[in-house]
Image (cartoon, rainbow, N blue to C red):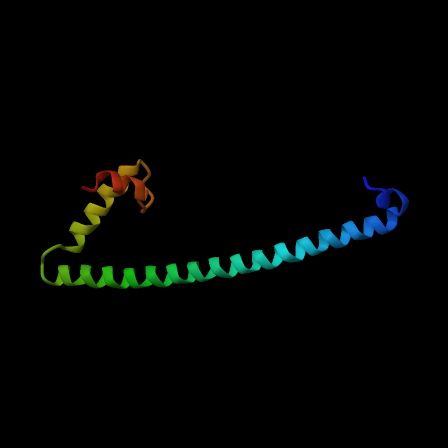
Length: 102
């Protein structure tokens, strides 16, 4: 505790409160910037996933049209691969896929 704090506690407290408020404003502005950047990344990822889904759907349709792979073949394969992570939920843990990929 400084002598200023000792002799002028109200003013010292006000100074400390101003410092805290200023620090919070700076931290808040930084968080808003990070939040905006994260929202942009999420929007970009959603756009990318939409494009990948469209591309994959088109490829699967063409393979089925040409008789290379039928939809039933794909459904059977999906059911088999879905069980690799020991959870039948229509998804696959990407780390499991990395382990079985060459």
